[in-house]
Image (cartoon, rainbow, N blue to C red):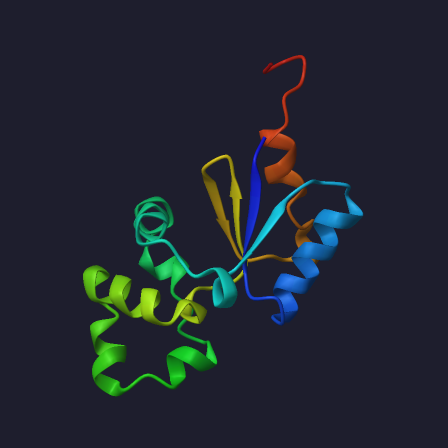
Length: 127
């Protein structure tokens, strides 16, 4: 199973998610938006799977710093796509990719990624 965690390394929530994965001995690759960029096709796939309202972090500092015109434009998916590519920190973090299944955000108090990872792991019943 390929697991990729997307985010920025100095984000507290990303740090918690990375620690959770490490503590649970889950192998993953970390992709930093700032240093590694964001693939337009990948962003399109995420938007198709989870939607703009889930993926776009309207509470982020990056969003608050947008012009009013850009904030208004962010309601249109095509325009939001361009804004997110230009400023990947507009994405709610972290984004966990479990073999193409996308999970946005992380909450350790709700078990972290336990449920998602257990569903993705093969066992006698679904192998």
